[in-house]
Amino acid sequence: MTKAVSQVEKEDFEPYILVFCCNWCSYAGADLAGVSRFQYPPNVRIIRVMCSGRVDPAFVLRALKNRADGVLISGCHIGDCHYISGNEYTRDRFERLYNIIIKQLGVNEKRVKLEWVSASEGKRFAKVITDFTSEIKELGPLRK
Ligand code: FES
Image 1 (cartoon, rainbow, N blue to C red):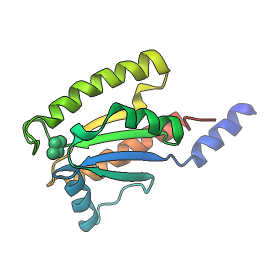
Image 2: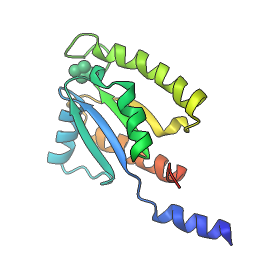
Image 3: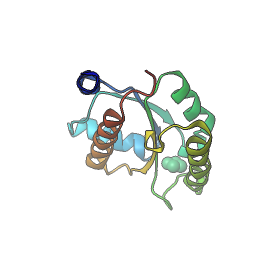
């Protein structure tokens, strides 16, 4: 009985997902998805930052603590960052963030993701959002 209720709750669950997009690639990719009318779930709130390197791990932790069920960080592909190496810092920071999330806070590591999306990848942006939303739905709410 309890299991059936839990399954129903999971099906009704609409996750709240925060997406940090760098201005020059990923946000433009999101924009392209919009103008191209590629559909993706409306569960995401996009925050535009000038570079993925601007995303302080504290932002992610605060989002998870306060409301978000999942956080996605998206930036230019490696080698394409408009600030030369901002996304390389992001990648390194993300590994450390992952270690904190997994080892210290006990949050499922699938709730935080890093993806590179270029300005020409509107379709890919829609797919990344769709896939991530499905994964978070499968995990269920972060807070009960
Ligand atoms: Fe896009 Fe740096 S400008 S990741």
